[in-house]
Structures are given as C-alpha cells and as structure tokens.
Length: 437
Image 1 (cartoon, rainbow, N blue to C red):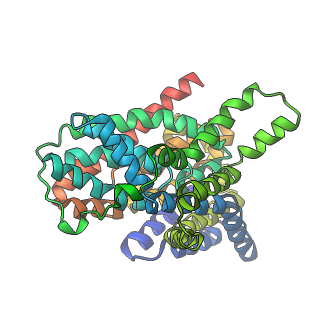
Image 2: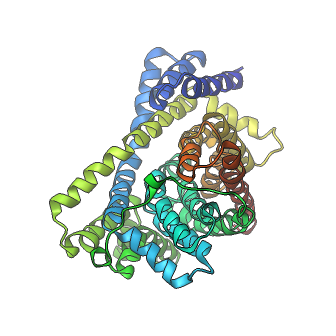
C-alpha cells in the first residue's frame, strides 16, 4: 500500500507541474504534505520533516551553487568563455571544428549553468557555421552534448551536487568518475552522432547572432582556462592526494579543509575575481553587479532543490524509505539500474532533469544503504537517467528548437536522440566502472 501511495504522489507531482503548470517548488510542498498525511504521519511531524528536509539540503548546497553561479557569470562576462572558444578553434582548425566545439562546451560547461552556457555558446556555433558554410546542427550537437553531460553528471551543477549530498557520496570521487564516464558519452552523442545529421537544414534566426568582445578586451587563453577549471583542478588534486597522506597530522587537516566543496568554490571564486576581474581592471562594483545578476538566475533552481529535499525527508521519516530499501532485497534488479530507471521515468514525465534527479534520489536513497551500492556511482546513474529523452515538456527542447529554427520532427531526430544517447551511455559507463571498483 505504501508503495502505491508513493506512486500516486509522483503522478500527482507530474500532473501539478506539467499539466496544471504549478511552480515546481510549490508542487513539491503540496505533494510532500499529501504524502505525509497518506503515509500516516502526525500533522506536526509533517511540518518538522519538511523544514528539516529543506534546511539539510540547502545547508549543504547554497554556497556551492551560488558561488558556482557567480563564477560562471564572471567567466561569461569577462570574455573568458569567448577566449576559450576562439583558442579551441585556432588549435583544431576547420577540419576538426566539431571536436573544437565539443571540448569548448565541456570546458565552459563545468562552471556555467546549462541555460547560461547554451545562450552564451550556441551563437558562437552560428558564427563558425556562417564563416565556414557548414551545417549548423552538425556543428551544434557536439557542443550541446558536452553542455548536457556537465549539467547532468558533474558538480558544481545543482542536480549532481544535490545527489552527492543525498547519497552521502564523495564530491571529488564523483567528479573523477563523472569525467571518466562523460568523455566517451560526449564523443558518442556529439561528433559521432552528429555525423548522421548533416542533412538537417537549419537557418538560425538573425536575432541570435552574438555580439562579441574585441580581442584586446579578452583575458589570455591560459588565464581563461585556469580560472574556469580551477574548481575541477582543486577537487581532483586533493582527491588524488588523500590516499597518499598519513591518517593524522596538520597536513591531512589542511588537505581535508581545502577539499571541502564549499571551500573549493569560495577559493576558486576569489581567485577568478582577481584573475578575470580586478587584475584586468574591471571595477569591483561591476564584478559585484555580475554576481548579483547570477544569483537571480539560480534562485528558482535552489527552490526546486529545496522542494525535493522536503519530499525526500517525508519519505524517510514516514518509514517508507526503509520499506523501499527492504523490498530491494526481493527484487532481482541492480540498484544502479533501478536508480537510473526511476530518474528516467520522472524525466520523461516531467521534463526537468533537476526535478527528476532530486525526486529519484529521495525514492532510491534507502537502497544505497541496504544494498551497499557505491554512492558515487549512484549519483552518476541517477544523473544519467535524469537526462533521458528530452521532449516537448522540457524547456531545453524548445530552446534548442527555436535557436536552431527547426521543425518538431527535426528536433526529435537531433536533440531528443542526443539526450537519449547520453543517458544510455552514462548508464553503461556506470556499470563498466562498477566492475573495476
């Protein structure tokens, strides 16, 4: 009976968001209250669980997501993203333009949130297409595949970062595993898949041609790449060093402090403020205005994550989490596959990758403990599932369609299939890693 209640609540969440157009945060709160009542919780306990779920999740995420948004905004506004793109084009040349755009998308996709990266990078694809008379979709899909993979697999993006907290995974290990899986996924969903799309004709709207900074206004390529990737470098370095350090002592404490995700993002933002901002004579007031604008871009994302935390806590405190965990023992299905499948179903139903990931995590979290599944791999499995088959209920679907000026059918044949390939490749990559860990 309890499992039927959870299923009903998920369906209700889908209806509220997709059919009735209720704000996702409010929908989560309403469904959380209904779930608590139906699962037999006391009314006062429901309120306490909702507050705890929101507080616990946001408490571990606010610094990472806000600092990440600020860093991404500075990378965009300073011209660092434009410089990275230009550098990649020069390095790879016309013949390997797809690969240049793919790597560009991957590099700028790590610090930039998906919508920001899309709006910033896609017009650069149009410039390349116009200059070299190449098919726009053929060039654009590799870049978009890279942006999508970083959005679904890699911290500090909201969904994977939230999943790390929910599954009590290690952020550094998740990032290293995620990059390992992301590279082949991007290659298959990007240049390899895009080679079948040369016949799709696209005439991008003139509105989306970019206004670019002049060369003398751009930071150096080395500075741009270093500043954009500093969070990754810090997390990777500290994670690699940990196994070789003694178990006690001041050095271990220092590395542990520097490897904390909050500290990593704050250090990276501080360095970028000087390297891309003050050091290039951009006024502090101007930099702070960038940061203010960036916060506005992620407030709704934070609210969605908070709502997901409320529902997760209701499922745990009601005892249904333990019931789901115990039922896993009687199911002959790999918990990683189950996590991917739940996220995929919610993604196809709702459209939002973030909502799909957070909701699936609340349902599957008990299985991580009861089945001793690797929490880092579970983050990636659920993240991969949350990217499955984007279609008409996903804002990214329409963003791509309108920017590239395509028909619905052409959007399905390019964008939707690209997302599906990423999702399936991610799941396969998780299973391959599982065999070695």
